[in-house]
Length: 357
Image 1 (cartoon, rainbow, N blue to C red):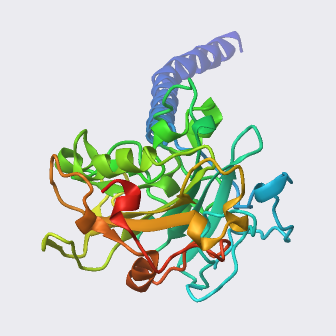
Image 2: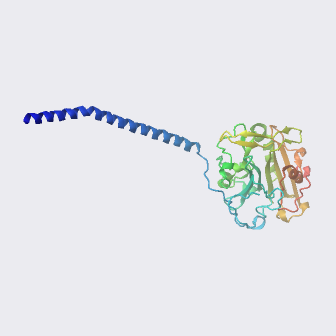
Image 3: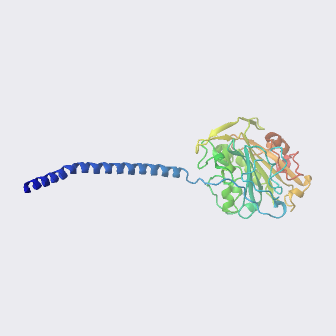
């Protein structure tokens, strides 16, 4: 009996020793599975981090809602309207504007491709209004009042971000230049330095369009010189400006023809319309110091004109009498109706001498 138990005990001990290698293999298998899972987790997190990094500096926004404009006195007093959930899709034949008291506004446009929205300065004044094209992924026009009080000591933002009042999917990502073209402001950053917030809004994608740098947007370029010319027209009574883009084939006063084109935005791979020409429409009192609203002035007390430059490199070119046209002529060219809120605006005439040309 004793010998049998001893024999069984030895057999059990031998069995346990014989199972040990299999247990070790099983542990190695479990360890391998854990290492594979950890590797997969590392790869997933690394790719996720790359995705987050690629979206750095891109402002995430909710569904667009137009900001409510505060009531102000005099010319800036808005007509109260129900705020839409999306920027007003507004018709080139319309005679209404989103704010009747704002002299610079073109008429609303009833076209599904266009989104109209506006932005307010942090001191309660309006900054600018924009009509943005879904098709071109560019502004059609930007309307703004110009006055010395918009100038100050605020530094340039340089943070190109989405317009929070427009759907992000219709706007170009502009972390860097388009590629072949630079990021050109319609309302210049230098024209809005009264506060950091006011300047920051000029870097919204809704205020940016593709522009040639050399000979156009750069110092002493054709567009840069027109911007400087417009800035010099600022006055105590306020200068009202509409800056816009033309996307159809265009031949300027010198006979240079620019064909309609698109470019691929290297930031997001999406096509963007490239303007064939840019324009500025100006309205102000003749003297610049009447102390009255332009809406109250007679036609003889006002002057307005349009200036158009073809989108091509022309270093040193400055505005001349050949570049000026009546506002009515530009209306026929673009299909927009300008200065609807100023019934006495002399849109039928453009006198070069009145603008120092």
